[in-house]
Image (tube, rainbow, N blue to C red; front, side):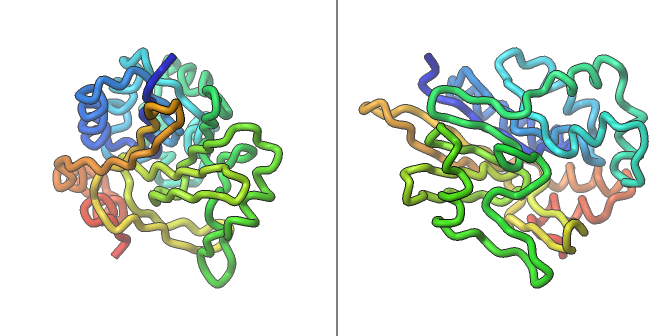
Length: 246
């Protein structure tokens, strides 16, 4: 039985941020890590990121939408075209082994939602921008989910929402990419407004209930930003350095 679980997500090839987070987790003597996906899809150092994650035997991996993209043979994505040629059969086999979702006692882990890893759980996209769902809507959407605590990533923005059904949703944020722009289904920007590497911890209190902690780790984001810039991605460089898109 694990007394605490560390939850990471959305590393996006930023091995420097990942290394700092793994060191922080190790210093807290946390034995189980759940990775909610989107690990290698980025212009910092996908192979160094893969090595760090594959060398850790205590990590459970959940499939992210960008992980699945990397299993395709072709994509018009600039990031795909940078990362895909670097992957060997061993890495692709590892990605294929990821879980769609994963549950541990009262905890459910997913990348986007419990049903689709390319959709936001807490946010709704409209032509007018990003709207956060209210608690009643979320409670209705999650009625059939038996677990009380739902951990997600995908939007890269730290959130915790308590629902009228006594469920709790935790967005753990992003380890390696604190802001990004996407065109689908509508153009939108997600920003954490900080360059820190974010992750979350769930741990049992004396009563046997689960407490939540969001952790923001400082690391050398200037170096990570420079690496992204060197690989031709000024957008990633700005996001990594500032937590914003501009």
